[in-house]
Image (tube, rainbow, N blue to C red; front, side):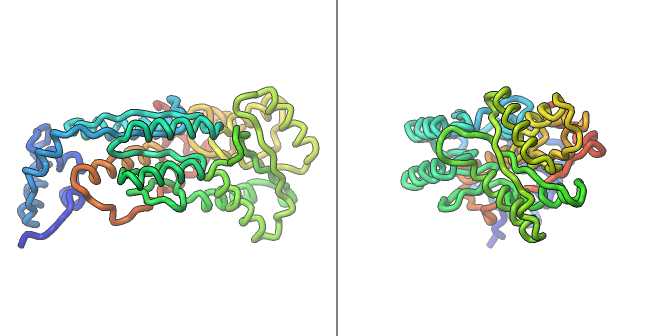
Length: 355
């Protein structure tokens, strides 16, 4: 009996992409002679048998995939997630995928709820979810589970759900790493600020909460929990943010480290720069175009980056495997690497300059 082997295993053994293996199996051409020979050799050695009939039926069907994330702007975090999804769509262009985006305001729980309700009205074949609010995501996933609609998470893992797969960093570990870095980069007697975004609704971002806990636990383990202060800032009202942040710093003059719990570090960097405050080390998340400017001019000390484009790319690939081949993921939760980016290694992330 022929050995059962998966397409991803063939790709790894042949040293090519999964998309290239698909093109060979479907006889769609556009494959180099070298890649073709490598794949054919693996197929011969493993005795792989491909179900052509099943494949032909699958390829005739159009799959409706709903994608719901915070509003995706080019050069921002969720824009990179979208770019990764679009890359996967192009990679699998011979598969009939009808992908519809349902964007929402990540600072407004009611916007998120409306977007999720629109998805349920469409009854898609599968869903990619970029979750911000835990309760809203759990409510959506229960509906999808009841309808047997598969879904994948990017950026976060939400407890009490059953996704096909997830692609995210360990947010708690991100918080601990952020704490260790600020502890290292600042004077011995420094105090620290947790800066979170104001949101409309009664629920905080699940990622921010996990990062905050990791950050607090790091300083608690050092017996320094009394050095942590916390406030919030408005993404939508810069003037209000400036007044609030300056008042906060005036009340806590020993703050020398500022932990931004999301990708909006540039907002705080602009406030510090505008007011001539240079002694505070600021660390934020995600290599967005605005944060890149802060790294370059020194107003942002470091950025923790989560590979958003890879998250989006792998999320769609995972759903394709589920829809076409009914392949269950051997590993459900895929943990992405955490890149630490400072001014010295920023040039080696040149692809982000062209987002």
